[in-house]
Length: 364
Ligand code: URA
Image (cartoon, rainbow, N blue to C red):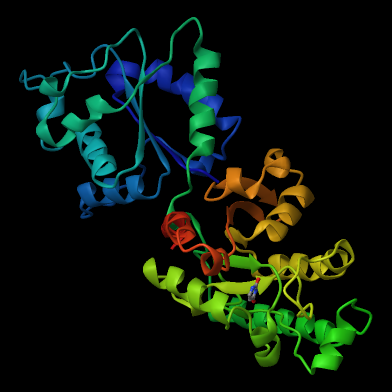
C-alpha cells in the first residue's frame, strides 16, 4: 500500500488537514497515513525520528495555508527559520530523499517564492502545487488521491518480516511444486522432455524473494541443466541484474512454460493452459512484491488473469511501467519488460532494458 505523509502547520491549516485525513481514510489504511509523528521518546534525536518517518513514505503532501510562511513565535521569530521547526525539517528530509512532494494549497494560499524559503527547502517552490479549494474540496482531494495511488511504494514497505523459518516453509512448499512438475507426465511437452533427456525447469532463487521474474520457456541449455536463464539469454539477464547491483540469488527466476518446447518457438495455448497453474502456485508461495514479466507471454497471462485495465496493452506500450495489482496476500506491482533475448537480435534494445531495470531499484 502506498504511504502518505501529511506535513502541515497546525495554526495554519488544521481544519483542512482534518478534512483531508477523512477523505484519505476512504482509500488508505490508517497506518499508511502519517500525520503527526507520534511518540518521539525522551532522549531520541527528533530530527532523526522525523527523517525516518519521511523515509518510509511514498508521497509527501505539504499542506500550505495562508499563514504557512509568515507565522512567527512569541518572540517574533519566523517559525520556518527556526532550527527546530518540524515543518521545515520534514520538507528538507523529503527533498533530500527525492520523495514525490505535492504542495497542497489551502485557504487561497499562494505558493511561496524560493526567496521566501530557507535555502535547504527553496526547491519546494518548484514543485507543482495542487489547490484544495473550499468549494471543490472533494474533487480536488480525489486528484491528490489518484497521484498518491500512482506513486511507487517505498522500499521499506516490503518483506520486513523475512526470516529463516519463513524461508524454510517456502522452500518445502516449492519442493512440493517441483515434485508435481517432475511427475507431470500429462504435459504436452512431456514427450519432448523424455526424448531429449531434458530436465523440467521450475526455477531458482530466493524462496522469499521480493522480486519474481517470469520468462517464456527454458531453452535447450536450461533444459540440459534444469536451471532457468543459464544460456545466452541468461548472460544478458545476469548483466542487467549486475548493472543495478541486484544479486541473482536474492530474486526468484522462473518461466511461464516449465519444459523446453524442443525448438525456438512461441508457447501454444495448450501449453500455457497446462503450465500457468504452476506459475500461480509459485506466486502464492513466494508472495513477491514485484513480478517482472520478461516477454509478452508472461505479461499477457498475468494482466488477463488479474483482469487489469492494461490487459489489452502491447509490450511496446507497457514495458517499464509499474502496474499495480491486488493479490490475496496484498498489493503488488507488475513490471512488464522485453525478453532479454531481444538483445541477441537487436543490440539497441539493451538500453531500453537497462532503463526498465533501473525501476527495480525502487524495490531493493
Ligand atoms: N529464455 C527464457 O524465457 N527462459 C529461460 O530460462 C531461458 C531463455
